[in-house]
Amino acid sequence: MRTASEIRRRRVLAFLPLALFLGLAGLFYVQLYAGDPQTLPSALIGRPTPDFALPPVPGLAREGQPTPALARADLVGGGVTLVNVWASWCVPCRDEHPVLMEMADDPRFRLVGLNYKDDPGNAARFLGDLGNPYAAVGSDRTGRAGIDWGVYGVPETFVVDADGLIRFKFIGPLTPEDVTEKLLPEVEKAARPLETAGS
Image (tube, rainbow, N blue to C red; front, side, top):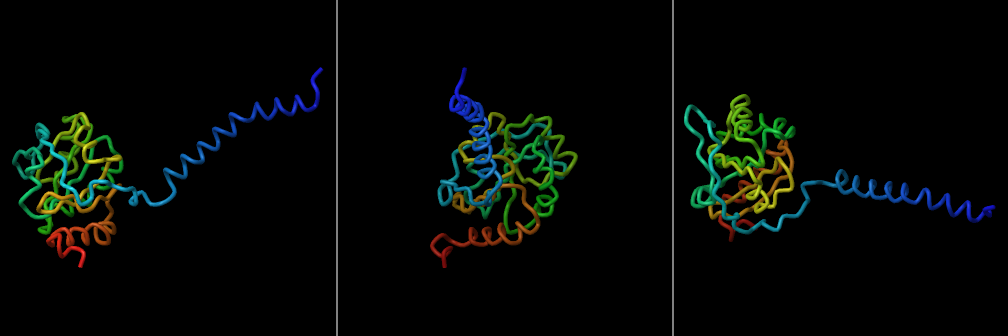
């Protein structure tokens, strides 16, 4: 016959896996939902954009013209460029899309897209249905370019200056408030030469 202490010990051991699971679930929840995801660090801020050359999305057009491919060379030598990482399977990308359509013709920057881990046919249909805000779109079917850019998930938007340096990273879907309060101030900073950007 078991003693009272043995029974208590068995009960404690029986509940131990549940306690561990709940502890890990709580930690996961805090890491995922608590705090501001915008504060996730990016080692690429202030560094050159990764070297990449992505093909265009077949069948994708803007204003009746085929939308060109996207490569690192397209981000150097012009003005400020916003690189928006998106996918047709991404629900927050659909929520963000009207904001991008509003931003498409802003003369302060050029908006381009990096289509992440997506089927090109689905990507073309997505933009065909909702409108194409991008001056160029690169098809990153394998996600390799996204990894090089340090993408955590989609959507994400990078501010790249005329020298091809990444100056800011916004994680998550853009809202009109985010554009006004966070993105456009970073665009203005990126439009100034680096030596005066901090002043």
